[in-house]
Image 1: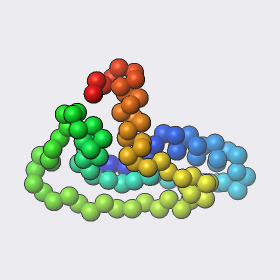
Image 2 (image 1 turned 180 degrees about the vertical axis):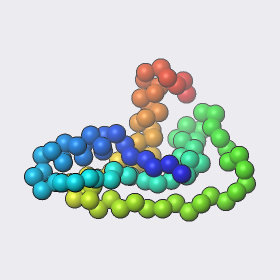
Image 3 (image 1 turned 120 degrees about the vertical axis):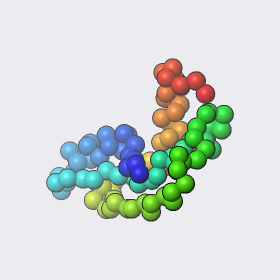
Image 4 (image 1 turned 135 degrees about the vertical axis):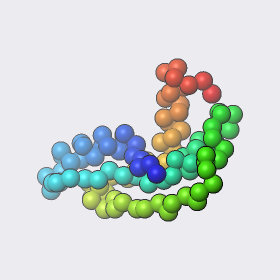
Length: 102
Protein backbone atom coordinates (compact mmCIF):
# COMPACT_ATOMS: atom_id res chain seq x y z
CA UNK A 1 0.00 0.00 0.00
CA UNK A 2 1.06 3.54 -0.58
CA UNK A 3 -0.43 6.74 0.69
CA UNK A 4 -0.26 9.49 -1.90
CA UNK A 5 -0.69 13.24 -1.97
CA UNK A 6 0.48 15.75 -4.55
CA UNK A 7 3.09 18.14 -3.18
CA UNK A 8 1.08 21.04 -4.63
CA UNK A 9 -1.80 20.06 -2.34
CA UNK A 10 0.52 20.00 0.67
CA UNK A 11 1.90 23.44 -0.20
CA UNK A 12 -1.62 24.78 -0.69
CA UNK A 13 -2.70 23.33 2.66
CA UNK A 14 0.19 25.09 4.42
CA UNK A 15 -0.83 28.40 2.87
CA UNK A 16 -4.51 27.90 3.72
CA UNK A 17 -3.73 26.85 7.29
CA UNK A 18 -1.68 30.03 7.71
CA UNK A 19 -4.28 32.31 6.13
CA UNK A 20 -7.50 30.89 7.62
CA UNK A 21 -7.88 32.09 11.22
CA UNK A 22 -10.11 29.15 12.21
CA UNK A 23 -7.47 26.60 11.13
CA UNK A 24 -5.92 24.74 14.05
CA UNK A 25 -4.36 21.42 14.92
CA UNK A 26 -3.09 18.80 12.53
CA UNK A 27 -4.33 18.05 9.05
CA UNK A 28 -3.93 14.65 7.46
CA UNK A 29 -3.09 15.26 3.81
CA UNK A 30 -3.96 12.03 2.03
CA UNK A 31 -5.37 12.15 -1.46
CA UNK A 32 -5.46 8.41 -2.04
CA UNK A 33 -4.54 5.09 -0.47
CA UNK A 34 -3.71 2.66 -3.24
CA UNK A 35 -1.72 -0.48 -3.95
CA UNK A 36 1.65 0.05 -5.63
CA UNK A 37 0.51 -2.25 -8.40
CA UNK A 38 -2.44 0.06 -9.12
CA UNK A 39 0.01 2.95 -9.49
CA UNK A 40 1.98 0.88 -12.01
CA UNK A 41 -1.24 0.15 -13.92
CA UNK A 42 -2.00 3.87 -14.19
CA UNK A 43 1.57 4.64 -15.26
CA UNK A 44 1.46 1.85 -17.83
CA UNK A 45 -1.76 3.33 -19.24
CA UNK A 46 -0.19 6.79 -19.42
CA UNK A 47 3.20 5.58 -20.72
CA UNK A 48 2.69 2.23 -22.48
CA UNK A 49 6.24 2.13 -23.87
CA UNK A 50 7.84 2.58 -20.45
CA UNK A 51 9.07 -0.72 -19.02
CA UNK A 52 6.97 -1.24 -15.88
CA UNK A 53 5.81 -4.21 -13.87
CA UNK A 54 3.04 -6.18 -15.52
CA UNK A 55 2.10 -8.15 -12.40
CA UNK A 56 2.99 -8.49 -8.73
CA UNK A 57 5.84 -10.78 -7.72
CA UNK A 58 3.51 -13.19 -5.99
CA UNK A 59 -0.05 -14.27 -6.67
CA UNK A 60 -1.40 -13.17 -3.30
CA UNK A 61 -4.62 -11.18 -3.59
CA UNK A 62 -4.30 -7.46 -2.95
CA UNK A 63 -5.42 -6.33 0.47
CA UNK A 64 -8.43 -4.04 0.46
CA UNK A 65 -7.46 -0.38 0.42
CA UNK A 66 -8.53 1.70 3.38
CA UNK A 67 -9.77 5.26 3.38
CA UNK A 68 -8.44 8.16 5.40
CA UNK A 69 -10.82 11.03 6.07
CA UNK A 70 -10.22 14.15 4.00
CA UNK A 71 -12.85 16.18 5.84
CA UNK A 72 -10.48 18.34 7.87
CA UNK A 73 -8.23 19.04 4.87
CA UNK A 74 -11.26 19.90 2.76
CA UNK A 75 -12.35 22.36 5.47
CA UNK A 76 -9.35 24.42 4.32
CA UNK A 77 -10.78 24.43 0.80
CA UNK A 78 -8.35 21.78 -0.44
CA UNK A 79 -9.46 19.98 -3.58
CA UNK A 80 -6.97 17.17 -4.11
CA UNK A 81 -5.23 16.83 -7.46
CA UNK A 82 -6.47 13.68 -9.22
CA UNK A 83 -4.00 10.80 -8.99
CA UNK A 84 -3.57 10.39 -12.77
CA UNK A 85 -2.81 14.11 -13.13
CA UNK A 86 -0.30 13.98 -10.29
CA UNK A 87 1.45 10.90 -11.70
CA UNK A 88 1.54 12.33 -15.24
CA UNK A 89 2.91 15.67 -14.02
CA UNK A 90 5.54 13.88 -11.93
CA UNK A 91 6.69 11.77 -14.87
CA UNK A 92 6.78 14.81 -17.16
CA UNK A 93 8.86 16.68 -14.58
CA UNK A 94 11.27 13.74 -14.38
CA UNK A 95 11.54 13.83 -18.17
CA UNK A 96 12.10 17.61 -18.24
CA UNK A 97 14.94 17.34 -15.73
CA UNK A 98 16.52 14.38 -17.52
CA UNK A 99 15.80 11.78 -14.82
CA UNK A 100 13.74 9.68 -17.27
CA UNK A 101 13.70 9.08 -20.97
CA UNK A 102 10.35 7.77 -22.09
